Length: 559
RNA sequence: UGGGGCGUAGCCAAGUGGUAAGGCAUCGGCCUUUGGAGCCGACAUUCGAAGGUUCGAAUCCCUCCGCCCCAGCCA
Image (cartoon, rainbow, N blue to C red; front, top):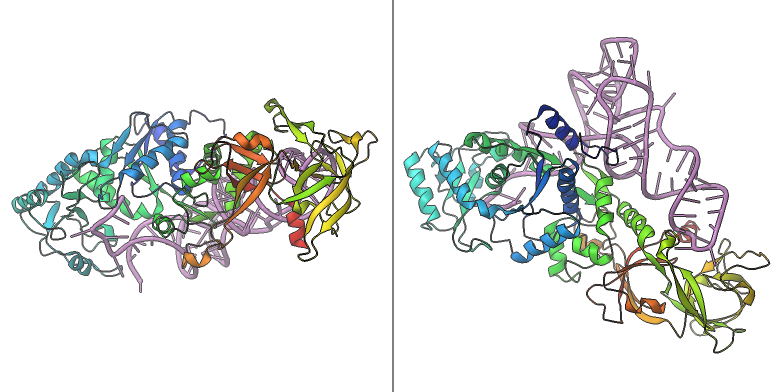
């Protein structure tokens, strides 16, 4: 049973397998998982699910989780990706300690294993071209044909394979293939390629090798070498399991159990590395860390916390059913986290000038505001209040509909933490019809936000003092795509033209020195994160992580 | 038409022969100096469908239907 069986973690079919293995002592009580990314792109939220699963199981069962780079294809892999992957796994809160491995570390052993297969008559060098191999593989419903090279002698195969390694043959002219069954219903068993010739330098082994092992051969043996117990991968590898098992059985090697689960799909976004790369390369987004990207670095820049992502990964569960989780659920997780931990501040995104007619011209008062009503230990701060303020344009209407309880002519509202104000007049730009200024009177008796006579006020709105506020660029992000499933069809047709709106906001002065990466709640508006790239000292730029839930917007929508 | 999987609410997901957890979303109500948060309540007579076994079936058996993955010298 898990160490931590306080039932805080929901169960899933993988835990059941592990519980069972522990009961039967299948692995001597060990649990050792691994997270095996290919360093050919940045990690995304789907990888986060896998990372949380693998490292999470290890933690829960007092086991280990290795980080292993699956770097068997030097033509697609780069050190830049290796670095970003390590940064992201660490940021998510996981530690592989001294167990950082690379499949390329095993190239020598893998070669020896391949030689053993050849010696056992289980693998052969094949001269078929890629096209010929495809033509002889058969189809989903018809068996393939044996390669004419299938019955070469062990000696000849050994010699040829050795010469492949020595670079005597050109790329594409020869492969080493497993001798299994060309009529197998499972295409993966139709004499799969084990080694191909690739005269490409590898990011770690340089030009030592010109033959590189394929995934199926590499992965099972890497797991075996590392004494992995449970090799967890996604559903599309289910068909590969017989091959995984075949290699290990034929070689008599230590044999972990491969277990497959359904990868994460998220509505309104894409998870395909290829498509994400295209968004970056075509400059549809600003980079892998664009706050609209579902990448870990994008989410980080957007303001997501590692805790919220781990919580999300835990709560979506693990199963074998293909599924698409609603984006709203991810948003719920970050709101829940930030609600408890983010400091409250006031910021006006669409400023409307308010003049308090009966307030002394040069007076500045200090108003005390609570930093987080959810956690009073976070203290209070002082806000300057003066005659001229900014409020949100949305918080004033000349002709308000029913249920609107913000500011309107002759109406009184509370300014958060300060005074009740009553609208006495407003200025309208005759050309545009826009309201440019609102005039109010304040009730000096209501300082702090309550009135001695006990009268109630319908709404509370946020504000900043005009002469104290800082001007700040604020980026309002929305889904990158309009479609729930942009992955089906041409995703570029579904790009949301409004996925990024930049506004010049008026923010309370305390935000001037907001640290890059710091997260805030702008009261009544949403959660924001000081951008860690574009913020300058004394001049922060903010990214909207997520809006606050907006009941009023819902009422408006319903009509 | 071959092989491998999967079908429990709008979205996730427990449940594995004893009478459908939980979360998100949604809808009501309470409360509120954030239309936030919080609190209370509603939300599957039924588990893809039809048969069968059983005192009893989402769970076992059969048949059917639907969806996903596989024909890279990618992972």
